[in-house]
Image (cartoon, rainbow, N blue to C red; front, side, top):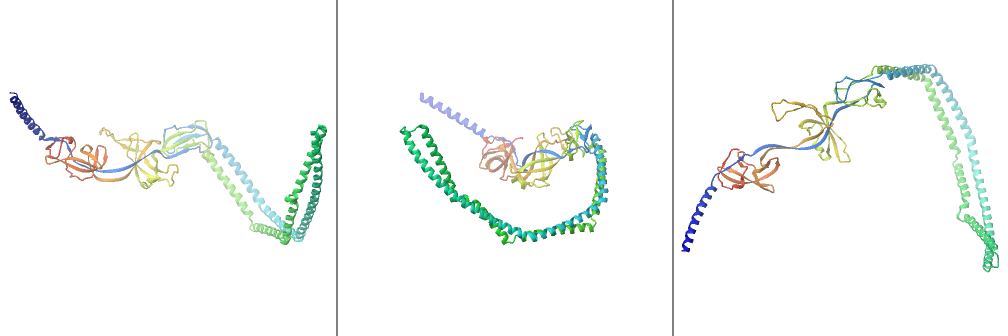
Length: 529
């Protein structure tokens, strides 16, 4: 009975299993709905970015035209100004004083011109007489040298010989005296040594008093000191110290002999002749000045000084009329360095500027590049400028590349001209018209430069490529009504897309979602994207 029940149960189980298998097979063979996209073909531009900042293209510190107290200020920081606008006014008192000084200088120049005109000829003629007297004096000294120089030089030789003989005689006397002194000191020291040793023995036996022993000891020490001094004095004759005076006299004699042998008086005579030549040259030059009437040139110079003083007076009077300080160009006042009542000086007087005016219609982008990037840039290239505030893609033109490298960081400075009016369109609302955005000096910027361009690059959604490894991946595509799996080579990732370098048909339908449920040969239908 149990066997029968078990057999029935087994039969029922098999029937259920067959039914479930058929149901599963039907579900597996059901058509899958998939989402697909076709490859997208784009041009990819590669860029390199640098950071920098904006500076005014033109920046001028406006100084006073004349020195004086500021009595009027017409511009504030941030104020727009036009070329020629009066920014401030200066008290013209100092300019008036300068004009008075110029008038005094003109008077002095005229007086000097009058004096030169009256005295220049007389002074030059007096100079001619002085030159003639200098020639006569040089001739007289030359005659004196010819008659006395040889005699004086030979007398110097005789004196040198006499000095040497005296030195040698003194040396010999000193040597004999030193030897005699050494013998006396030696004898005395020998006696005092003998007496001291005897008295020392007697003192130790208490046969003489302490004072007698001390007296004997003092005589011993004194004798020893004298003996050592005598030895040192005698040693001077052995080490040559005592002969220094003789050696000096010998050297001086040798010099005197050489001067006599070389006829040194002839050099003195030649020097005297040279002075005659120089004096005659001076005389000739003075004579030419007289003959050429060079005083006329001095008069012309004095007259020119008068003309120059007149011009200075003219400029000083013009400065009196230059109390107004004007804007050098259209721009904005970026700084005001002085206040009402301050004393202003000109730029040439190392004064402080009153205003700084910058031109903001055109700015200057400044950044640095590594030396290795130098080949990417040249003057005239276009770059794109962007700011953190959202202003992007401003076209700027490179106008300067530094010829020197900063040694600290091995970079090169680059400048570009940046127009300060750009059109920005609100991308969130196309109904809002374009608007003008203004850039400000000092703004941090990003500079972009195009480094390359790749055309017809094939892109797919990143999620459509599976099992990426070693530059390869798998994609699931729709071929007819079924799934096929392809191996492709992949490249760079660009946001949500990936480059596929294996060329696919332009109309290739690539499955972008749910690939884990699919396999090659699965029946699919394309759903709406």
